[in-house]
Length: 191
Image: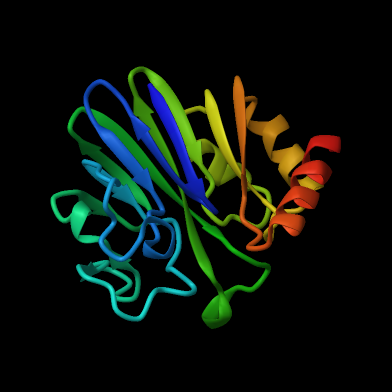
C-alpha cells in the first residue's frame, strides 16, 4: 500500500486492487488534476473554496465540489453508507465539522476503507469525538488519518485515537498557513 499526502485532507492510497483519492480538492491538485488519478473518490465534506474556472463536473450529491477531469472515471462517494468498489469495502459514517446541529449543521463523512486487508479511517474535516453508535459502524482502524489544526482539538484527537486504537496515526494539517499548520502539529504531538 502506498499513501501520498497532497495537503489539507487530501490523500491518495494506492493498493493492489484499487486507488482511493480522499478529498481531492482542485485547489490542491490543480484545475485539471493532472497527476491525480484514482478508481474511487471520497468527499468527506463540500469544498469550502473551490476554484472558479475548473474543468470537469460537480460532485453529484453536493453539486458544489468540482471533480477534476483526471478523475472522471472514478466512482464518487459523498455520504454515509456501505459501498464495495473494485474489491474495496468502504463504510461512510456521518459526523460533523462543528458543534451545530439541525439546519445550521456542517456535515462531514468519516470513511473507512478496507484495502489490501488494512482498515484505513479518513476523518475528513471532523470536529469532535465519535459517539458509541458511530464507532459501532466503523469496522476497525489500522491506519487513522486525523485532521490537525481545524475543528478537532488536540485533546479530542487524542481521545479519538484512544477509542479507535489504530496501529498507525497520520496527522493531516488543515491550517492554510504553514505557521499555523506547524503549531497545530506540535500541539497534536504533545497531546
